[in-house]
Amino acid sequence: MKDKLSICPRCGSDACYITPVNEVKNNYFCFGCGFQTNDLMKEGEFDFEVYEETLPELYKDLKNTDSEKRVWYPITINIQDKGTVFANGTSKFNWQWAGIKAIEVSEEEKGKFKIPGTEDYYTHKTDIKSLKNHSQNDFIEALDYIGFYN
Image (tube, rainbow, N blue to C red; front, side):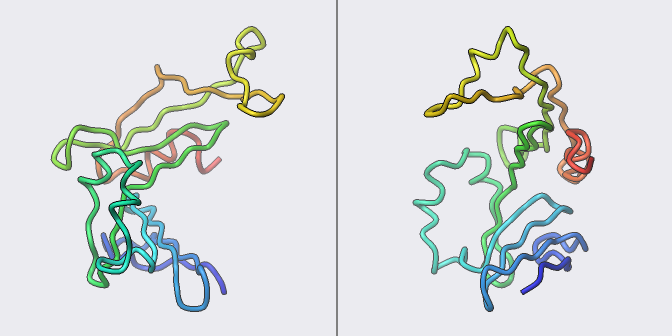
């Protein structure tokens, strides 16, 4: 089983990364539109009510279904030493991709960033001042902003 790039069934871009789950099921992660799904998340076959219990309202509003009845949701990327990319807005009519960078935790702040249940500390924190919005079609640019490709 090999990963591959393919045409996205949701947006039509050529940047949909397909990762096999097993011989017959796949995960789909599109760098073009910034949405994800898998072959298990099909209308009528998956418990979306339970899945959506912890999702932000915006992510529920933005979900959509492809021709194979797979339900797609926005991706959130969080890389501890680089930052986070996420859908940011108030509704499916008013949203953008947002990138927010991570910065190193100083020695003076270290005590505030203890990892629960361990003796370790987080090495980076979110720099709220670095929040930058990108258009709905600029998921790749939001990833680039946080240094995802470096």
